[in-house]
Length: 420
Image 1 (cartoon, one colour):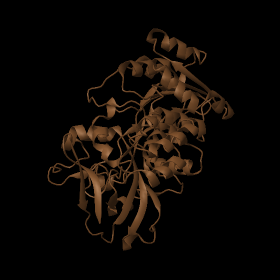
Image 2: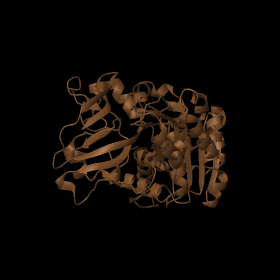
Image 3: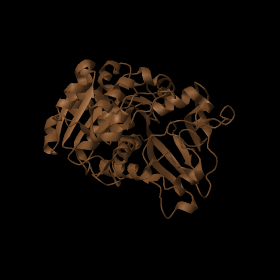
Image 4: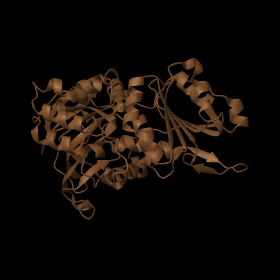
């Protein structure tokens, strides 16, 4: 079968190409990709090329397909998996396979599978590691967001606390405790707010900070204090642009007790150190943001580590159980990470979007792989409608849905946007 895909040949060398997939083997599955959400990890892989731990050394000869936050439909199933999967099933993929101790992952390491493609061959290793995950919801874009959502879920599960006089770690955030999400109104921070509001273990106080008031206002519109109050949570948004008073202000919101759980969503030294300073007794600092600088460092108060039992954790992605939880929560309508999406584009927009991802403001950039149109922000659809008439109706749908992407918009795009 012919496919169109974006492949990496080296550092900053991405190419959109059409080529023939090999004939499907008995232990493989042929699938159609519908949507892919572009991740900052793909930007890092593009910049590093074969220096990236997940990308093979020979991509100049055997290029791999990029993109790892994708969803689609199964088209054909090899004999080995016909008792588990069938054509027509919707799917998402956990890219962190951990197959035989390797770092191989779809979207980085494989020639025939990645999210930025129209069709892919799913290798047997994905099914062997139970990483081909069914999705029972209607929206493909939600299944594409399952992987980034699982990263947040994994981070919440990784936090821990100890009972007084015990060395047993009780996993998860402290139920009914004080939770702070610093630099928390980017796409992943919004996902964390959504999860904290609707998961089974909820905080009593949730404080979300940023230095951009516009982004804070948008977050408060997506996840309002009134909505949080209905979940039994006191949600407060705080602008910490005045760094001289930020720590004092944040601690005052807890009655000076400090925070049981603090998540850091930006790899910025002052933010990490601010997180350390607001920890309470037995407080857990979760460094969520992945720095691109391997020498990134920040100060941590070890007096408090010794006497106040403060501690630090970090995660890099979620596991398969986290992703299953994300898919179920979305299919059940308990969480809706649509607020993470700020841009849409066709397969032809992938190369420039990936190359310049840090420079493009907003949240997640969602790609529809069978379509051809440039990356456009959801609040700019009307401005592009003269060149791309289908965007006029999309603009109405988005505005009628409080600026959010939706199933209605997705269906309309899939039926009306130009084909690649």
